Image (cartoon, rainbow, N blue to C red; front, side, top):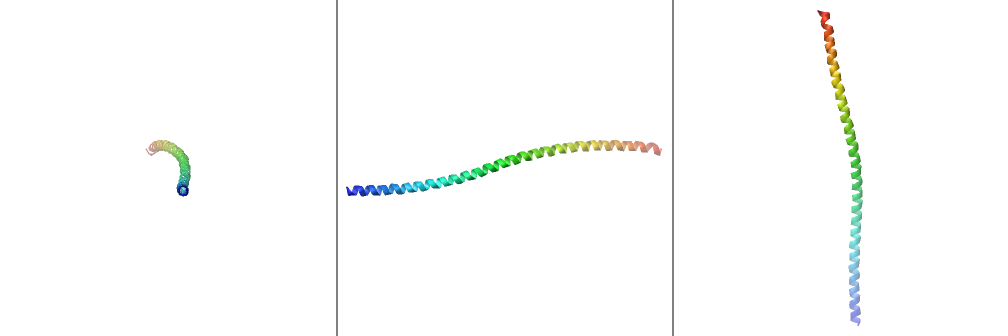
Length: 98
């Protein structure tokens, strides 16, 4: 009877030791998952910030391209006006010298 009791105590100590080991492993896993969650949260915030920044840059690029097109049109019109003014000046200058 005493030997059975001793075996049960040893078995219980073994089970308690294994339980402590499992608890420690679980706590390590919980800590690892918390750290990963923190990293994922930071990465998610960075992705959102980059998404917003990208949208702003695309809008700025679109506006810049529109301004460039407008400037090119104005430049073309000015070049036409200059060419026409040169023709007028040439025509005005020709009769006075003849």
